[in-house]
View 1 (tube, rainbow, N blue to C red):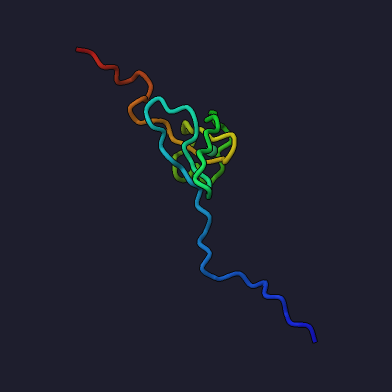
View 2: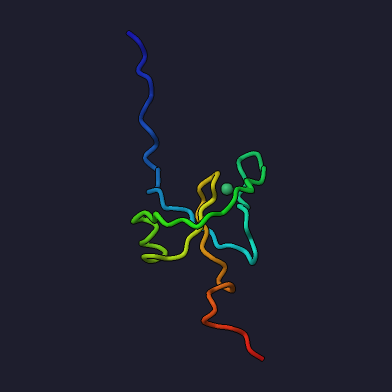
Length: 89
Ligand SMILES: [Zn+2]
């Protein structure tokens, strides 16, 4: 009799929450590192097709960028928000 192949995954699997980072000032490329420690450096592109999971976190119609390679999501740098708060001395 053949031994049963173990195919039951450990039950500790957490629900997959989308990973959302925050862009650093002037950041244009992804700073994720893969398991070998190599910088991803993918281009961050404006991402319009927010999934419901992401919308639940960032809000509907939020400005979100996504790495073209590893698909990590980025929120805009909070200091670079639109001109509603222009510095005037
Ligand atoms: Zn990336």
